[in-house]
Length: 136
Image (cartoon, rainbow, N blue to C red; front, side, top):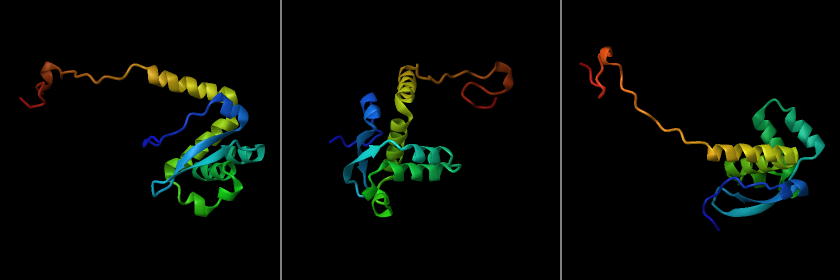
């Protein structure tokens, strides 16, 4: 298994199926896989109207994992990144194929954008600062 732990890709097939088998990481470094499901309409509505984003994330996680895992004992053992992965995957599955396409297009645009290269612009000659930064 790859040692790098990162956000999984959600495919159109996953969205149409309404679930994805996702790897999660515990604080002790162990990993497990969990089936993350899209939210039902009631959970999606509750999350979308939650004014506190942190509590919305909690609601999403609890609604997206199997009932036997939606408890403090299991969730407290996960890394913060794993909790974000559950939430991200669940919301991607819930928001559907069109939202997935927009997300993939934005990611591709960011990957193909020209990198920003820093440039050095020397100060004007009459400002009293030499190009080295020393004062005259």
